Length: 210
Image 1 (spheres, rainbow, N blue to C red):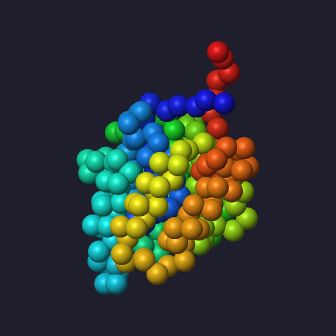
Image 2: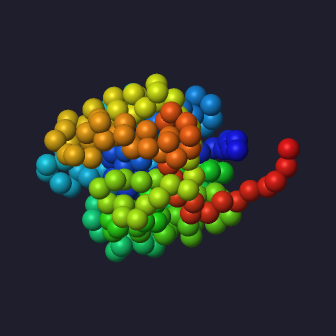
């Protein structure tokens, strides 16, 4: 199956989420369509994470995303559930401004309170639009990819290179390059391709035709 979006919106709760969840796909499509990458929190209230904002821009540059296609939102990490209405209104304005026709966000199997909240509000704000959920391995339980997207080895390597820009998280197991590659090899095996990124289907809106 071929699929396409004229305007593709990537939503993450924190810097690194989009890269971890779908960095290879993002690199694969960035020159084929219009993309916008929106992260709701910049994590700057945590003194241990002061460098992640800069690292996020560096990682996105590796994936081919220019600074003008990156937005860091105003929300505070770990307390998204207290800002549901504000997040909904933020997404409604984003829908009006960008008019996406394909959205990638956190899997519904993700147990992190920020990830879970933003996916629920995205479903409310972007009714009538296809939404696919990506996996952030440290907080997704029960995730299984029912939507598999073939990516190239170059895409895989660029994702690994992008994640290496996060010096802050260098020692975290979920930034291990072998783990990153093995996940895409496994998803590729499920798709009978060399490499793939996997998503769960949150909502598909389609039209059958040639």
